[in-house]
Image 1 (cartoon, rainbow, N blue to C red):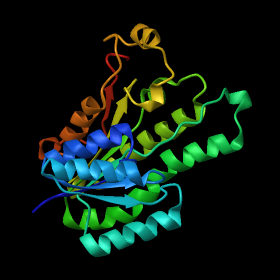
Image 2: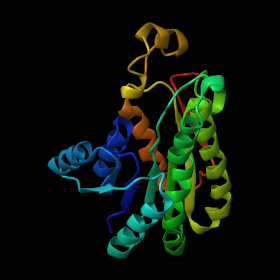
Image 3: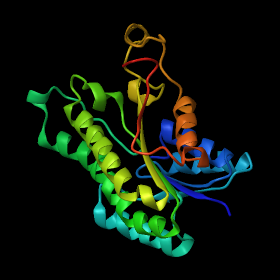
Amino acid sequence: MTRKALITGGSGGIGQAIARRLAADGIHVWVHYHSNPQAAGAIVETIQGQGGTATALGFDVSDWAATRASLERLLEAEGAMDIVVHNAGITDDAAFPGMDYSQWQKVIDTSLNGFFHVTRPLLMPMIRQRWGRIVSIASIAALHGNRGQANYAAAKAGVIGASRSLAREVASRGICVNVVAPGFVDTGMIADIPAETIKALVPMQRSGRADEIAAVVGFLCSDDTAYMTGEVLNVSGGII
C-alpha cells in the first residue's frame, strides 16, 4: 500500500525538495501551500513528470478552524496520513526592543501554533493504524538563538519541546516524532546574507542545499528509524 504524506509549506524551497524526495521514495505527497498555489502546482507537475504522485492542498496553518476543516475533508476522502512533515514557517525579523506584537504573533501562529493545528486533527487516525512519522523543520536559531529573531527562535524552540513531548506520548503506538534543525540553507530566506558571512560562520564554509535537508527528512520518514524518536538532528554544516 502506498504511504501518504502531508508536507506543510510544500511550495517553498525546502518543502519542494522534501516533496520530491518523499515522492521518489514511492510516497504520495500532499504539497501544502498558503499563498502560492502556482509554486505548489509546479512541484506537483514536476513530481508527476518524474513518475511520482502528488496533490496540491491549500489552507492557512495559522488558522485553527480553516486547517481543521481542510484536514477533516482530507481524512474523509483519503484516510489517515502516514507521514506529516511540518515545514511551514515564516520570519519577520526585528531587534526585540523594536519588535511589534504583530511580528511576534504571526511568526508564532505559523510556526508553533501551526504545529498544533495540523498535528491535532491527523494524530488519532495515525494512532489507530499504529504507524506514523512526524517530522518538524526547526532551525539552529532554536538551539543557539539569533539576533533579531527572538520570535522565530521562540517558535522553533517551542516546536522542539512539543515534538519531544509528543514523541513520549505516542512512542508505544509505532509513531516516531523527530525534528530537523537546519542551518543556512540556500533558499530565499538567506538571500540577503553575503556568501562571505556564511563562509565565516559555517565550518563547512558554505550554505546547505535543500536536497541535503530533504535527505535527512526522507531517512526520518522511513522504516529504518523505527527505534528513533524525540531527536533533534542538527543539519548545519558543523555549527554546534
